[in-house]
Length: 425
Image 1 (cartoon, helix red, strand yellow):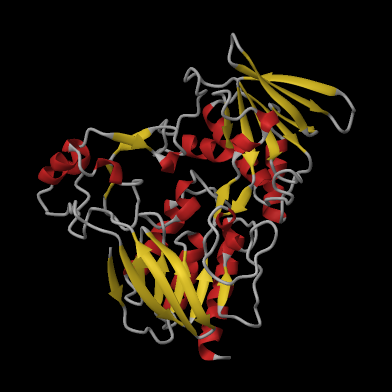
Image 2 (image 1 turned 60 degrees about the horizontal axis):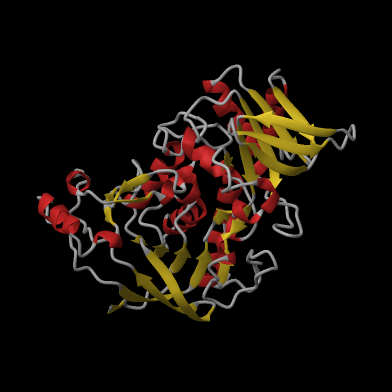
């Protein structure tokens, strides 16, 4: 491993995480004159938004907002991007921090033109984590069509194999560097914004909901990828067990949320995400029956309330107020039976459907990957900001569950607080 020392960056800001909150923080700070180091553990920027098919409030694809942000980053020399990088340690005080960043090898350099020759030459396939493991991808790959930086990645699994030699020989631009090694970069910054985002709660931990035991039980983010044109099914929603169109679908809300055994809090976005997913299904299958099992429905704001009212008018969408007790498979048909008690009528319900979608909640990434800094973190893993003290702050879903609009607003505010740390105002 090599170590690179970077000259002290007086008045600079370190943004950890390249999702929508990290992008917004970096851009807002850089466009008013501050140097920003943007560190992202994935080989691309965009975070969870990049994985969406559509997002609120306009139900537009992620390209709608991300391409503008990517252009602003590309045109701004004050933003210094480090992908496949993780912060290992931060020491110091507000206005004077020393950060140690480890950068993993991509095995592809800046000469890459995204021609795709390496993918054609590669034979090995690896699990496609961008699609939550629902398909595989070549071990030399572009993470997704709009990936930024626009540069291929070579999986470490291929290094030392014959495939690696074929990949290198296929590149006419000398972009493949199989001998790349991890390196450590030392940064000196005045403020740090943790924009480490969120991850879906592990549905396999919810014993009574059957995820991982039955093919036709998927999560909300899996459906999101399934509906995306670049997803594992090229945008076609179908039953995983037989690739057939689902004639009925059940959504199980608060899957792991508002539960003292899992996530004790409301994840804010799950209700609206499921209503959005109803529009995905309805666009492809006008007659599919959709059942939404919920504890309470949350539609925060006038625009979301109007969206909810529109979904309620669909005669093939049925809302059932009741917590789901059990989800089980009918062996000979691979259909799923959802058992719940209607809290309004007291009636016990057994609803059989072709497919079940678990609306799993969001949890901060820091829960499973503790942040290497002295931060005030609550029992759920969210960073509690010290707005008066400044110095190190959390933006977006590292601070609390939020949708894209709220995340952008919060990130803009954290960019300002980081600048205030630098200026002392």
